[in-house]
Length: 127
Image 1 (cartoon, rainbow, N blue to C red):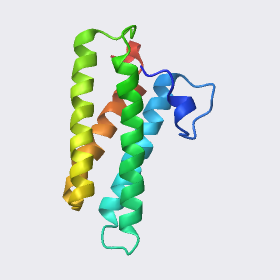
Image 2 (cartoon, helix red, strand yellow):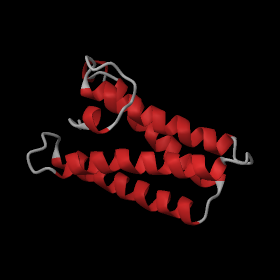
Image 3 (cartoon, helix red, strand yellow):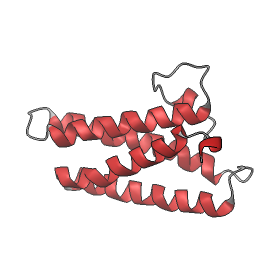
Image 4 (cartoon, rainbow, N blue to C red):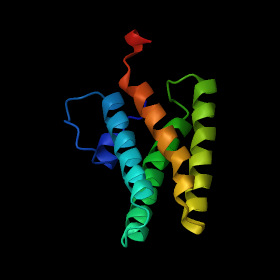
């Protein structure tokens, strides 16, 4: 789906795996970092970890946005538009969390990252 994720994002996945696997791993990693912040909300370093997790997730979704906006992208237009709308929600929610941090605001970001990652981890033949 998003060809440049490997170069732009270190997800810890072997370079031989498909771009779908790389994207999935990067989303799962972001979800895990956000979940750690939510679960460990009262720990003293949560502000720094939260800022890092939100910014990492925003960077990843920015990469997705750039790829989806490319005029020669092969994904069907309706799916691209839906993913771009979802990425706009990610942007809005992330900024809201940074402006007014509350652990319950993280759940939507975590759920979206996990759902998209799960879909990417499923091969087209499995669908």
